[in-house]
Length: 239
Image 1: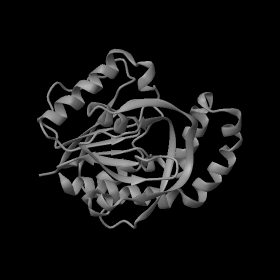
Image 2: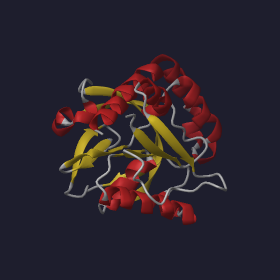
Image 3: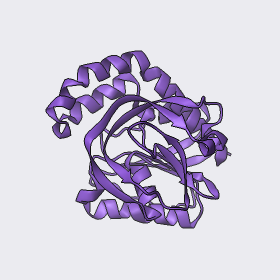
């Protein structure tokens, strides 16, 4: 029987990206809830789904988000209570960390572009990073961070020079994972969408860096996207 995943897409430009291709390759059925649509409804029951994926958000958790954001938090709480596999990306990882007591704050300067991530000892042993090197390429595009210290019941799986918590999971529940980075959208065609739609929250200096980021996406985007394809395959295999 095919595996089924529920995906919550919180904003039009925070796309599934490489998730679609990887899921199709493994014959995983997806239901995508496009939360910004007026008639979008998150299912009241998750029994039909083998796992939950929550993508990034255009709205800072520090500035609200209204009833629909509360619905996302509620479905995540329900998913955790049922011990369902969970993958949070960007803001989806922040919601995971916050559910365990972490504090999420705005970050300045914003973290954008391609950088190197380093697996921790626990990250090298974790199934989500199986078949990946100790150093992986990360695509970053966010304005919030998880503030230290991380709650004791969270294992840190990867870090970078700009973020201590690039990837993490719940202690004893390796199937519940958060990724700060957005490698699912690291291909050049996807990075272009971020550059076009998210300029409003970048500083003038960060805007000056955009041509260099697009050049990096042309050279490195497929590498980062391929890293994510392995990560998502590993997540599927954990279900």
